[in-house]
Structures are given as C-alpha cells and as structure tokens.
Image (tube, rainbow, N blue to C red; front, side):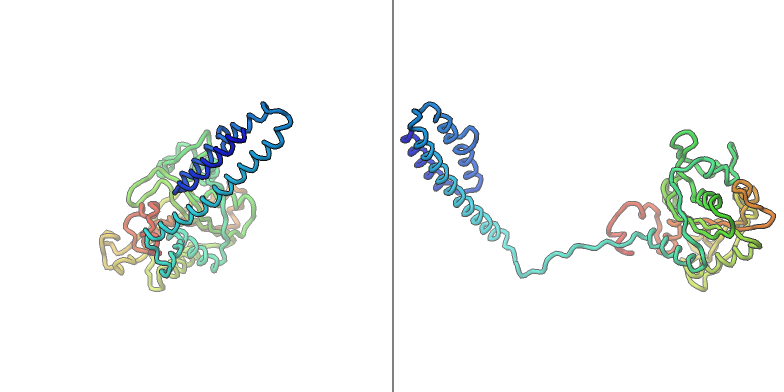
Length: 338
C-alpha cells in the first residue's frame, strides 16, 4: 500500500508539472481526487489492512492527498494568471481608454404627452381618476347610453373576455364609476389604455386615451369651449386656432368634433390635413341627461360636459410622427429623439 501511494504521488506531481492549462489541471484533480479517482480507490482498500497498520497508512494517505491538493492549487493559480496575461496581450486592452457608459433611457412620447396634458388640466382644477381595463358591459356601454343592439356599438369593435366582461373601448367608464362614488361638483380627467379592433398606420388595437368630465350647476357649452381652447393653446401654442363641428356621440347632446389649425402647415393646407387647414383632435359635448339617470344625478339641477382624445394622435401631431406603429415598435433609435 505504501509503495502504491509513493508511486501515485510521484506520477501525480509529474502530471501536474507537465500540465499547462486550467482544464488539464482540473482533469488531473478529478482523476486523482474525484469519487472514482485513484487516491479515492486506494483509500477504500484501507479496510483490508491489519488493524495495526491502518492508522499509519491512513496518515500517509492524508499526507499524500494534502501534497497533491497543494500542488494542484499552486499550479491552478499559475495557469489562471498565465491565461489572463495571454488574453490581455492577445486582445491588446488599452486600460487608458474611458469606460463605456450605460445608456440612459428616455420617456416614451406617449408618456410625455400624458404628463403634459395632466399638468395642463391640473392647472384648470381637474383631478386624475383611474379605473379597470377589463370592464363590465354596463359601465362601458349601457350606462353611457349604448343599450344592447345599439348601432353606435359598431363604431367601437370590441374585445370581449367572457360573458359581459370586455377590454374597455374608452376611458368613459371611469366617469361613470366616479359619478357613482361622489355627488357634484365633479371635475376629473381619466387617462389610460383602451382597446379596439383596429390596426393600420393611424390606428392600433391598443392605444391610450384621456377623457374629461365636468359636472356642476350651470355648466354651459361655452365653458366646454373655453376649457378646450385653453387646453389646445397651452399644448400646441397660443396662436393655434380652434373650431367645433357638430357631431354625434351617444353619451353627449349636443356633441362636437374639435379641430385645431394644422400645426404642420400653419393652416395653409397640406397632405396631413388633407388640404383643409384643420386637424381633428378630440370629441366633446354636453353630458346626455340619460347618463345622469344611470348614476342617480338630478338632471334638472345640474349640467356638465365631457370630452375625449387619443393620446397617440396628439403625440403624432405634436412631434410630427407619420406612422402610429412607430410608437409601439420599441426602436431605440426612434425613441431617443424624445
């Protein structure tokens, strides 16, 4: 047994001295000290020795193992240092060069527009309200004067989840939820994500809206025009023209489409405004009394207006973006411009 241990030690030292790489040294470690290694196999043979010899041979085995492990440790350290030195030389790392800075992200143009709009309306006394994106049909349609089978529902192709649950098509349900929780006066804006079955250069199946609601005594259509004029002038510039055109929405009466003077051509006429000099940015109107009935408001003593706009459209006009899909492609080169 002693002769085998001495022979094993000599062979191990020679192999360690001849090894020139970390991988080769790791192979030697496994072949000698692993579960099935040579030294491990010899240790299993201690049981066949005379009881008097076992302590002596056991000490010798431990001594050989310690010497092999020390030699392996020293050789591994030397091999790793040589590997690092060789790699540095091969790659010619210039330690005097400045390091690579981590690139900072920027806010998404949609987020920038939402923040700016919320800031403008906060200055006009509006609070921010939020609601669930998976909404009940009653909040999304019926309470807003969209009864079942109403043809106006076709204007908002809808993603239904199950039964009467759907992905909201606008943030108007937040107005209903707010009015159910509090009595007039109410003055809120409701930003959030909405969903419709549209997808092209100017539409996306997922987009963002901000809707507003003001309910109080003696609120007039003039108040609506005044608030929207202040808003558009602060967002697009003080000289931006504003006009209102008659329109139809089930939850407002009378209703209007709100246009601004084309910010691209200065109202002279271009491809973006279809040579009309005007760009549609939002819809608005006086809240229909039928909506008040659903939230137990007294339509005889109160009045109010509501409005809604698509944030992506506002961002496209504000920043001169030609294709809405750019806002969702996550191209860093595009997003860094903002």
